[in-house]
Length: 249
Ligand SMILES: Cc1cc2nc3c(=O)[nH]c(=O)nc-3n(C[C@H](O)[C@H](O)[C@H](O)COP(=O)(O)OP(=O)(O)OC[C@H]3O[C@@H](n4cnc5c(N)ncnc54)[C@H](O)[C@@H]3O)c2cc1C
Ligand code: FES
Image (cartoon, rainbow, N blue to C red; front, side):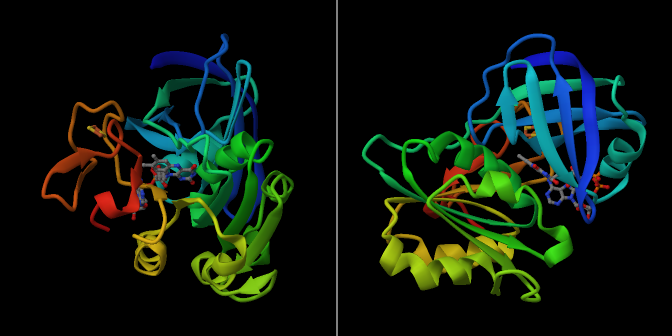
């Protein structure tokens, strides 16, 4: 893990309430798909966790949805050339085994962003099927990145683009045909719960959790989640990726 003073290269709106931020770290930093960074924002003592979408040499791209003050300040005040304090790479990331040849990714909301890194990583060497959920047409973004696999099903709550319904519903309708060896997922808790009850236990399902965080490096315990065996785990350090049966949702 490094702390870098990065330079903003681009910070642009790519869909409704959604921004893409690319920064240069000044050195190449290896990042695994599913790892995240903690981004410092002026006026906020705690950095904000954001998944890495793309890592290309010293250039890192993250995408973020506007939520509260931190993400709004990030969108409004960081133009190209500004300095940004970032900790990275953090967390364990996704890992797909050699023998797992058919990979399904199921994402919803801001959960599509870490999955874009997984699509970029695994689409060249696996049969990859993506089910990505958005609120409506205006919030769809990064479609060219999500199309790298064998199949993409875009889902919207209102049916304005693609499948009308959740990405979990669309995935479960296809599961018999796709026969995935492993599922990678990220999204809001109700979505992950639906996935757990529909597919958990039938095949390996790895979820990336989005808990509120303080330090991002395992020291403050703000992000602790309950495990199904009664133990606890720090989402930032032991995760954010867990096998779905391992954690209480
Ligand atoms: C490992 C990890 C990776 C993430 N990756 C992304 C990403 O790629 N893109 C993206 O848009 N967001 C991502 N998030 C969520 C992002 O960190 C929060 O949206 C952000 O910190 C909100 O900060 P804020 O100051 O704008 O809002 P705040 O004022 O802090 O909060 C506004 C609202 O958002 C809720 N909230 C805050 N943090 C989280 C959180 N971590 N999860 C769920 N709800 C939260 C609060 O409860 C509150 O209701 C990730 C979170 C984690 C833990
Ligand atoms: S955020 Fe501090 S321990 Fe996880």
